[in-house]
Image (cartoon, rainbow, N blue to C red; front, side, top):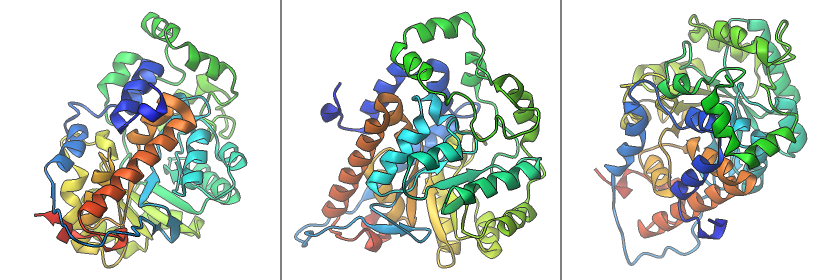
Length: 380
């Protein structure tokens, strides 16, 4: 299928499934345990109905707004996704360039394949960096310093990965660092020649933010043990204060899925929170992000920017999240599908689809300014 025939995000998902090795496709497109919350994140949007309005002047529509003080072409940021560079060779660079050109933020994961420095060298505008606070606080401080040096304008601190939930597909696929060369994986790779050739042509094949930056982790073979020992179950709100002492720019707290936690985050002085359940990849059985969004907005929306993450697959989903009170939204799997399907062009196509769907939906609801959309546009 050519890009001009791609009509929605799911077209790109089908293409990505064909082109990306199974273990890496499944890594991104899976949830924890029964995947109930993973499915609920998308299903929650289908239960919301829009209020159609007619005979209103809907000329000169604008989707422009801001996110954490940054002007954006629409209320969307590319969420941090680990191992993005395994969906497509140099994946983080391709995604960052597509986001930069479209005028939306790109967030680089701590667990990226391309390093902070590699992405900075390939882009011309500041991007965001997502931080996991590891047990090795010296390494975390070093990551923050590297993000500053690279000109990152916001730090997205993820709070919901103190321990790693089980994802059945990863176990069945033998996903590890480095990946296990099982017969099934080798056979699957044989049917992905374009991906294999692309990976052979790039030097970005390990975790660029970690390998070579940690004593004793000089290659992929020594990475697994270090990573498994570093996620920090002691991370608490004092850890957020510690990060604030090291970071003097915009701070966004990701992984808020409860009103009480949202209140603490607002009290602690963050610039924004992201209502998120980690894409259903952590606590299976947790509420869908959309189901808690309204209560969190009501509780803290007048004190802090409330961003939204979880299940966004269309411009209508973005509209529904903004109408419920989200200041803006994040896309993870949606841009990953585009990246896996066609690299930078695929990510650009994702953004084009979302922009058009959001613009048309806003117009048919009788609105011309995304910043004026609200619950009056929903049937509640």
